[in-house]
Amino acid sequence: MSLNAPLTAAQARKDKMTSFQAVQSKEQITAVVRLAREIWQEHYEPIIGQKQIDYMLEKFQSERALAEQLGESYEYYIVVHHGQSVGYAAVVPDKSEPALMISKLYVRKSERGHGLGKKTLRFVENLGQKRGITRIWLTVNKNNTHSIAWYSRMGFRNAGSIIQDIGSGFVMDDFRLEKTIGQQTP
Image (cartoon, rainbow, N blue to C red; front, side):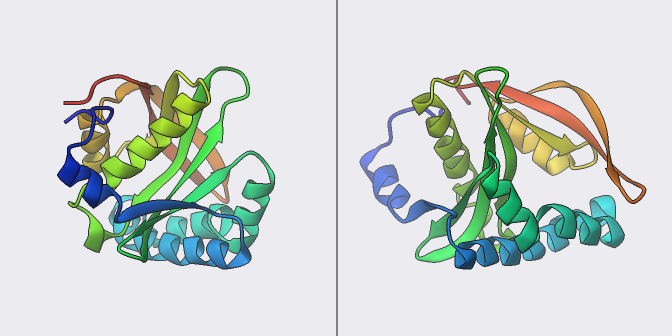
């Protein structure tokens, strides 16, 4: 199914069980921080190790860091499914071109496999389309093979390698993945 294809009646009913709440309050920031700790711990420990997880959570996903990001150009959204917070996404409009960076797109392990990642990606694409954005992009750790394969299935292409020093002796060794909005997905 294409991420942009019309929904069947059954898919539309199922989609109504999922919503996306813009993060604006201190309580919502706290909810995102809790989700980040849970998801990052489970997902990234085998990829980057505990020390880098702890460092990155404090630097990028603490209450202070999220509040600062929201004060800049970041937009965070909580994924709510059946009334429960099950994931989150963050996007950043690119000031130099009509593009939108997906800074975060995470779903709890217990909720994966139910199409919530696709719904979240569709939500991000719709945000972009409403703003006249033609391209979305993100970075993903080169050793995060499961996520790389998923993004490839969603229509992203590898646009090259990026290595960023993030301080305290840590680097992010990533691929930049890009997708043209409106591109059909198998």
